[in-house]
Image (tube, rainbow, N blue to C red; front, top):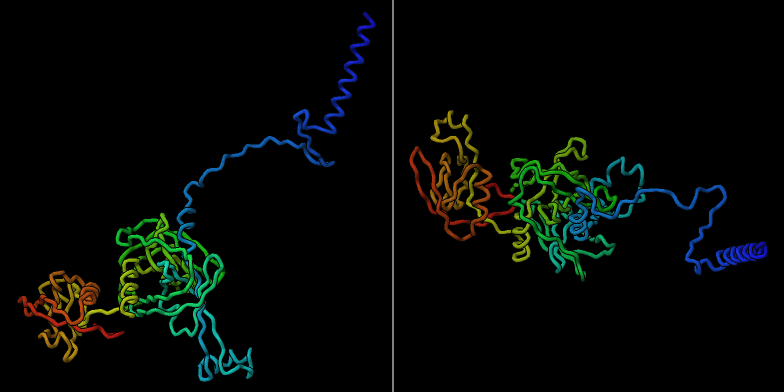
Length: 383
């Protein structure tokens, strides 16, 4: 019996030795995983809880990811000639002395949105106004010179074009369906720090009488818009373009939560007109108007408390030739009701120059109808 026990003990000892050698030299034979542990470290296995990959709750990463490649940075330069007031400024001269060349290049930053695979880019007119050279920097780092296709100062919009292949293009949304409270994202290049996305809601729609542009129908948002965001994109939560960021209200120069974007419906019509005609052609009849307020109606004994009263008529203009006189109240344009001066401006601007328009007036408490031959609106004209 003792002999069998001794044989068993020797067999176990040899087996354990072989296991130790195999575990050291060929651990894969045994299906084991050996981890080197540095002296002084914790064990190679720590009990932790790892969540499975999943979309972030409430994230707008997909919308931003779709729109960001189509938003570009715009660099412009202007020649500062010898008679430029900046070159005569003592503070400017303090740093540069009298060693300035006849011309110095001044770079500025803005943003733009690629809206066509043909290279058309929407931006603000004030971003590229009077620029001698324009360079576009794409989100993927590509750079290309751009040429101006056309501008529309009255809406502060401009169209430029680059000759680059395989361009990312943004999808146009429906700004007319935008409502107060909708979540929106603003994309641009504020202060030149690089492409940035900010989030907010639509605070108001149809903002006008801000005296920023001649034709105003702004989307107001509290998404942060700063210097350099001009011309960038305001998008919905699906990544579709709702507007072109244009201006902010601020006393400090930074964002205070009141920004304005030009609706994509306006931007699209302006862009199509610029591409087709090189400029936006609008109707004009040569009148100056004033909104009728309850106080004004009561003071002058007017029969209504809304609409527009004609304060002035351009001599020999379309309205003058049609018999429209100061003091008339404009009620309708081609059957469309005129509620205020802003509505009147837009209705007349949409008329085709050279065509005829039927307008209804209130004159001395009597309605009158006139036919006006529409003229072409001169730039920066007063309606």
